[in-house]
Image (cartoon, rainbow, N blue to C red):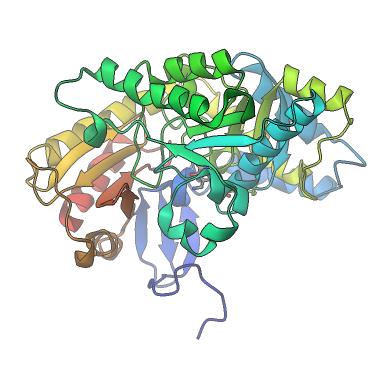
Length: 436
Ligand code: PMP
């Protein structure tokens, strides 16, 4: 009997003993092709990237860790320099955390501290979106909206107002063009700000491409441009969460590049060190940084392992691969191929309602009835069955039950390591077809 407090104790977990590129191997020697990048887009370089392993070895051989309030280190300085060099416009500073939840929490705390420092303490409200996931600490649960995970904590979560996500398949009316739909949902932000009182709102937070709660869902063109205009008009800070979709996953380094916007905060984790060390990051613009430094002098958040030297060494090695010649082109090409293969295989499937995504982050949404978009009854537990079928066939993917506004539906997220080949894609799509 296991004495580990597993998060999903009822799941039958194989014991992983080895990773090899696109594959993970269990104790019985069974090989699983990784359609979920180590889980939730973490292992973007697969499972045995020598340059990262070597960088970690080398750094641990020198020193593993010293608190970054006492010493800075070469890996810490170099990683910050790499991330800020090609960051979206204006993001000049980077604060390190251990995880995505902490990166989100730090962004929210910095936004609050900024307004306190500049003498606008009445700005304390945050607006988020329904159907978003930003992490599992109480701040991240508050700004996110994954109802099943929030449920036991509802009474102690911060009071955050949530507007509609940009979810074209279920949100766009037939009478609307895609552009009109994007503007309509973005304009909900303005209505929310006006309703709450413009001088009381500090930040709006969104995943650039949503990752988990309702499958991978990219925004429609123009949506974030309008969001940014509204934020600027009312002095509301924009936090974009790219913990899931950032750092190459969508075919560009930052997903928001494709939407033509630069936020005030950009959060990362997962692919920053590709699972070789836990690390997250909050990028922030100079205005906010300077207000904090010239105000009380220190950011009041922060964690013991922020800027952990070995984690930074791993992250540097990963970031060099991502920025290497042709790497992002490979992601674009194979991402297009994944989309094409999914459309060939499932485009006419009677129970596939939507195939969507961006780059190497795709979702297949399952429905009982294509014409009405009616989902399968939750009691059928379809997602779990697909997950188990896939696992039995040697494919790891993410089948989940999404919830939004009373609707509950089944989605499969496919986001393999970015080193995936066209043969690997054929295998993943074939096994997924069998599992479904
Ligand atoms: N933000 C997003 C968009 C995420 O997908 C996740 C994790 N799935 C988080 C934040 C939280 O990251 P972590 O689990 O590293 O705390």
